[in-house]
Image (cartoon, rainbow, N blue to C red):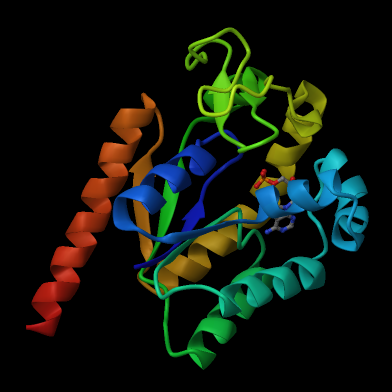
Amino acid sequence: MRLVLLGPPGAGKGTQAHRLAERYDLSLIATGDIFRWNVQNDTELGREARAFMEAGELVPDDVVVRMVVEALENLRDGFILDGFPRTLVQAEALEAALQERDCPLSAALLFQLHDEVAVKRLAGRRTCPTCQRTYNIEFHTPRVDMLCDFDATPLVQRKDDEEHTVRHRFEVYQAAAEELHRFYAERGLVRIVDADGSEDEVVERAVNALDDLAERSKSRGR
Ligand code: AMP
């Protein structure tokens, strides 16, 4: 299975990506995580991306596409891309790279959520800087106050989760969302997942959508 995850910031794509990757044994590429690692480690890529990220802007397409195409080289057959593509240019570049390898996408999961719910989720989000797992001060607290359940690292608020940056990230998302969704709808790849609910409920909806997809492609192959 080869998947891209679409949807607004705050829809829970990162968490869902981890859960789905585990369940279906898929490689996971999360472009935001790769950038954050590079910023933390002060690499050339990190220095290129930092200012864009802190302002809630997109990193330029050529930089992101190069990074993802390189990552695809080392992947097993099944993968999930989280946070990519975010523009039409990126979607077209991905399609070309996958066509070259003769391994087209299986689906684009679109996590849908109302803006106000998403803003609330993001403003309360706290992230583990070590493993990038996310929590929420209201809905998903860690077992021990402000420490990651998995590696006990103190949780932080990402700079781009501060409220004024969150609002800007929404505008950036909305500017590209419509044409991006149309691109995948035209290819019959969009599967809508209602992202309003608990983490487990949303995973279950995504799993149902994917199992349905697997069932259909099996019956087409018969
Ligand atoms: P995320 O964790 O996916 O919200 O990504 C955090 C930040 O990384 C974004 O606000 C962008 O600055 C940058 N970024 C991640 N993925 C992309 C992408 N596909 N295109 C451009 N910028 C990206």
